[in-house]
Image (cartoon, rainbow, N blue to C red; front, side, top):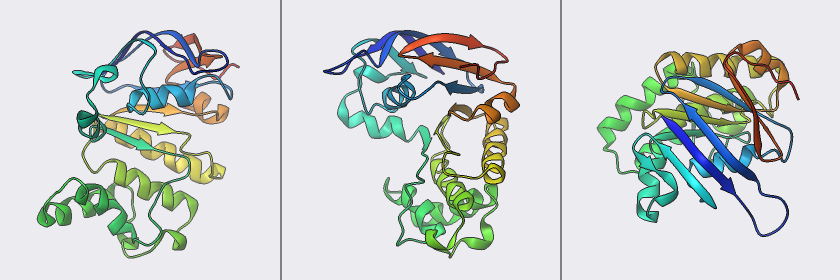
Length: 226
């Protein structure tokens, strides 16, 4: 599913953000990526979604050579990767239904398909009864669930969750993690990028640890040890 071969990313100043990363994530895995601020977690996410290109090395996701993609192919790749962010990135003037539908509308999906898919997605995240609400009328946890529903609009094979619980209290954070586990059970590969030690240690899943741009630990059943 995801393979990084000798990947490094250097910016114009300071130390490299990532250095000589070798990593392989199998289809259907649930993997946590942890590390302190400045460890390279955000850079890794940007490389995976082709927001940045590696300075050296190769990144492949499925059959895609991400670093070699032509700009016109990047949107096609991104439709196969669901991404969830800490700040939700919902459109405040659109309802829950419209926020989820927008991901399909932007790609030219027909209205009939949208009317079929959106209710299915809202059912997955248990928000069928709030389809007509606006983001400001929802709790933080509910807003993140809308974002998750939107990220699933194209039935991605990979879901990248970048600090998805960073703005949530412990109860809502646990609900979001349980939802990610449910999605993983459907067969979707999940890459959870987080600094939340309690969540990572409770998952008892594979943990990849970054430190100052280096991959310093990769444990099949790991803990956040830094």
